[in-house]
Amino acid sequence: MALHSTAFCFTGVVSLPRNSVCFSQRTVRASAFSCPPLSSISRSNVQGKAFAGDALLDTKESSLVVCFGEMLIDFVPTTSGLSLAEAPAFKKAAGGAPANVAVGIARLGGSSAFIGKVGEDEFGYMLADILKENNVNSEGMRFDPGARTALAFVTLRGDGEREFMFYRNPSADMLLQEAELDFDLIRKAKILHYGSISLITEPCKSAHIAAAKAAKDAGVVLSYDPNLRLPLWPSAKSAREGILSIWETADVIKISEEEISFLTEGEDPYDENVVRKLYHPNLKLLLVTEGPDGCRYYTKEFSGRVKGMKVDAVDTTGAGDAFVAGILSQLAVDLSLLQMTASTIAEKHSKRNRKKCKRITASRY
Image 1 (cartoon, rainbow, N blue to C red):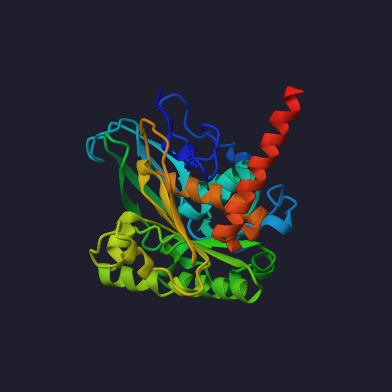
Image 2: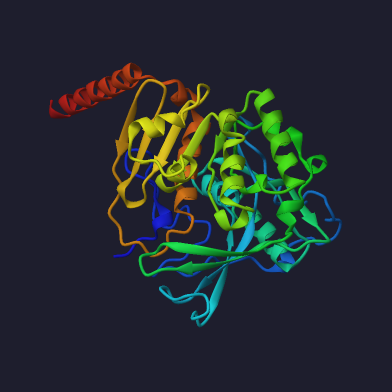
């Protein structure tokens, strides 16, 4: 039976139930993500202000993950394996990597918030409703009356892999300003998560840098998924420089093997020495995802690999975001995991095994 590739994380890291994490639910057995009626949104007093109403849920500040960046509409072909021109029809679904992560964390029972900007249009209202429906705090979300919500058309190949065509020059997410940031929300987070798309143009770039600085100064852990989308950058060189410009401020970085090759200008992503070049002195955890093959993890002291689960890939859109949501939902509860050493991990495993043996022995008598 086919399993949606965005609905799980790799065994050994965190196990998620089927269809529990993917923000844009698109499987061969499940219907598309259903959206609440637009009439449920209060459309008054939204110009440049936070989304008000029931979406402002109580925040469990001790484990809050704030996700900063883009939120958009994906248009996905109803038939896989065709070009955009050949597709007979498209389904709309919520997207945007930071928003995907926020929803994934909330669905896992964690506390998450989203900071970003959408257009004051029908799609913007729809996206705000989806955050509300999924219990994501949208206090930091802004509406722009003069710009449209970003759109992306997604090509699905027969193997589930995809390509993107974006419509966003400029879109509302690119126009978020530093003055519109909710710094109180940022400072009370346990983790601030972001990508690189918000670094491409001003004024969003300055807002991104200001948000990360405020979080760092407040002792918030910074999580970074470069999420390379090369067509959005002016050039490959500007993409590489932009992604690396904030590299050394992050505490946790998730990267794919393709992104390693890109950032190292063609070096072997499976060479440990190449990967270690990307490990900066202040980094606590580097995660390298390898699609169906699982992932590798690196700390200052040790590294390892976790194998992937065997599935029939239907649509890989959001798979990396689901992975990040699983990781951050666990770290937000217990940041001491980032300070673990090889010896403490071995000690924990040893204690767990001793407890297990005691339970087995007790059950026999």
